[in-house]
Length: 150
Length: 119
Image (cartoon, rainbow over all chains, first blue to last red; front, side):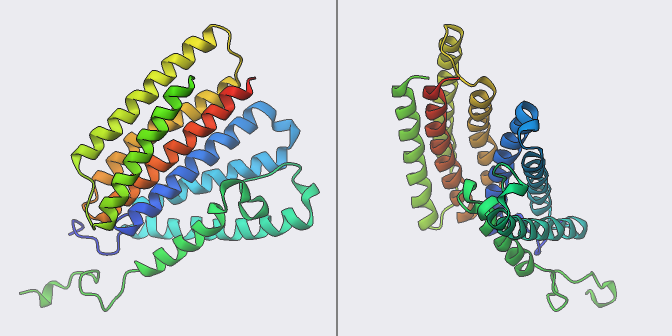
C-alpha cells in the first residue's frame, strides 16, 4: 500500500530541498563540532547554539527525506518551524544585543555566514510541507476504503 | 595541496555542473555517464588528499582538523549526492547533481584558502 506515496516530501523538488538541507547540516555540524571541541570556552553560548541549530538541520534533513510517513512529516514540520523561529529570533537578537553571543552562530545576522541559506531554507521547507500535505479529497492519499473497491 | 590539482578539480566540477544544468533545462534525469564524470572528480580529490598528506608530513603547516574536515566533506559529497540523485528519475536529479558539483568546487576553493593560510 505504501509503495505509492503521493505526499512524499523527498521526491521531485523535495529531492533538491533535502540535498540543500543535507549540505547545510553537514557544514553546520562540522563547523560547530570543531568549535565546541577546540575552543568552547571562547564563546560557549554561540558555539552550543550553533551545535543545537546544526542538530535541528540533521533532524530536518532526515525527516524530509522520509516525509511520506505521518510521523516523519510531523517531525519535519517541527524541525523546520524551529529553524524559522531560530533564524528570525537570533537574527534580530544578534543585531540588537551582539554581546549575548560573543561569536557568530549559524543563525547570526539571519544566516549571513552561510550565504543567508539558513534564512531562506526553512520557509521553502514550510511551503513544501504545506504543498505536499495529504489531502482528503485526493483519492490516492485517502485511507483505503475496501467497501468501495471493485 | 598543489594549485594545478585545485584548478583541475574545480574545472571538472564546473564542467559537470554545466552538463547537469543542461540536462535540468532539457527536463532529463541524471545518466550513468555523468556518474562516471563524478567519479573522475572523486579521483582528483583522492590524489589531492594523498599529495596534501605527503606535503603535511613533509612539514607544511596547516590547521589539521579544519583542513581534513573540509577535505572529507568534499570527498563524501559527490558519492552521497550521486546515490540520492540517481534514485530520482526526473529533472530534479540533474539539479541535485548541479548543486553537489558547485558545492565541491566551492569546497576546493575553501580548502586552498585554508591550506595557504597555514596553521
